Length: 314
Image (cartoon, rainbow, N blue to C red; front, side, top):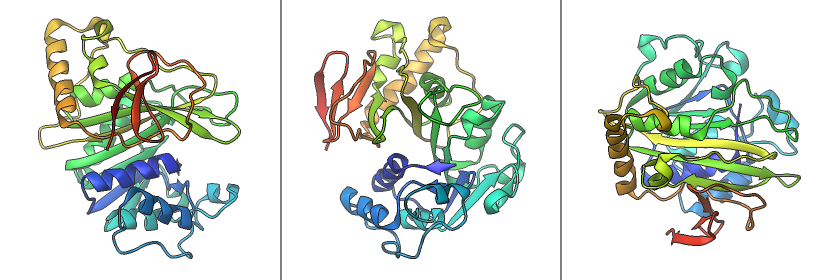
């Protein structure tokens, strides 16, 4: 599993929004996407002083197999999460591969003693590699404390220019609908389209208002490309959030289901949260359907379908 620089930046910004503490879990031992010096630089650029100080040069990953495939030495996962403010990091896996501390199968019911035990759960592409994604997603959120947060990333489709082959393709709205109907207090969904060979990306954030019937009956079309496409979700729960409600796809919702769904979406809109992620590319090279806001490198938000600037962030 790898937590790339884009997700690392998002977690730093989340720590700016509300400081982290306590326990973090990752699904699989994470190979971080940045070296020590670049990690320190991202904290400085975003404006967050790491808890316990900046990372030392010797805090490099010597455990994960993937770390040897990079042209640099990634920062240790434990060191990055320490900088975010966590007291401990624990790894969940189906075996003790690469030193995982918690062993269980996400396809099966989460053990009761683990429920409600973590403040942040990060999954960088486990969900698209399990047979039972509903159980896995429900298990992931059962692990959260009542005020816990979750960060999920997945490959949305097979890409001929990328070696990864997902077991299933995760649709952005499938994730959004689930966190919405289970009354999480915040949910941001992003789609990133990656351009070779530099591995720059254009990142698009779901415009909440398009998830209601205000536009096109609430039908948000996916972003499609022959390039690598990934989806990311940042969601936050509270004591009233659930993990067992099943959403109905937009085309088949009853009027009562729509009213319940739109009530949750309006709560997201009222929070006016700034985006966690932004594009690294100044210019997009593909067509994106309505309903997605392109987060530009300078933090402006743009409607790709019209080219209209929606608002400047910050």
